[in-house]
Length: 433
Ligand SMILES: *Cc1c(COP(=O)(O)O)cnc(C)c1O
Image 1 (cartoon, protein in one colour):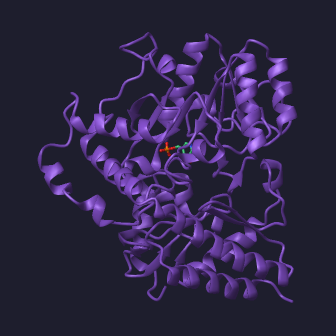
Image 2: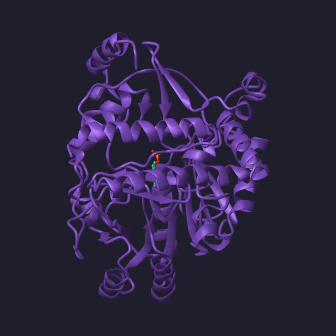
């Protein structure tokens, strides 16, 4: 970063007057890293440029959607033609069919799929379907997993709570979350106990198969297998929230990687190629209860929007014919892991680098990391300092400790080497030996 943030600062002042906190999603305010946000003018490949002309290596990638990087040629192809044919019709378009076919082909558990406009809508709707299908009200989620901001899912709960959920946000009525149970991630015994204590009452379990919203914490294969078994045993629906992991871990997502098959899957992020999209899909028998086939209502004026479908289809088609994208991404992640883990070890730093496939995160605390309990006590102050110093070196990390570093196909080996060397350099300035 070479130029002062004059333009960003001016925009932030204007924004704060008319947008709560100056941002349209809280993390963008950079509050937890102790500085003001930068405003972005454009992105190209692995780099983004702010309104003051500074260039950054982008480790956010829009929080996941941009698996091919910014402005990828495959996504821009034909975009003007699509645009000029009209941007929304409110009646079916061919692209919606292609999109549904692509996802159903990639995911073993998905026979049918419904497009929505965000990940939040996808999880909210999947929960409604699970409740409608089972005729039960309770849902089970895990502490530290984020499933969008709908009322029933905005529950973190005190750890170990087996009773009623406690809302994480004012404005969420207690009655709405009374039926939300919260378990500990990767804790099979606790999950079984919750099922036994709530016999015939749990409609569904919703889980991020690899947690990406408390930093990155993969679930164990045994945990996901146990969820499958428990759901079968107690007649509940298993929902994988693959809004981040979908088409990121692999073309078939976490389902393919773990070989555990959910009943419903939620999507977002990558399947929109950078436009606002979500989707939920699953077994034909369950999806058939959705209106107009069945009685469970769910609708959307802009759902399946042709522009969004175009960007999503182009992304998925590219990934389908270029499976090497996943190899590249994992190799880059392994490179970072190998170098940083060795560095942390040799300097005895109180840090842990976690990687699963191409998903990565640097925790400012010694590991291991298995659940939300383990991320408590991370040194968020130090993370803030680290973030600010990396930013001044031209690297944009997630402006919060509990988020992963997002890689894309556009990140070159030079980018990765720059990231690694700057990380080491900055960490050395932060810890006195
Ligand atoms: C981002 C995210 C969501 C919410 O998606 P939005 O499009 O932001 O509403 C849901 N679940 C997970 C796992 C996510 O990472």
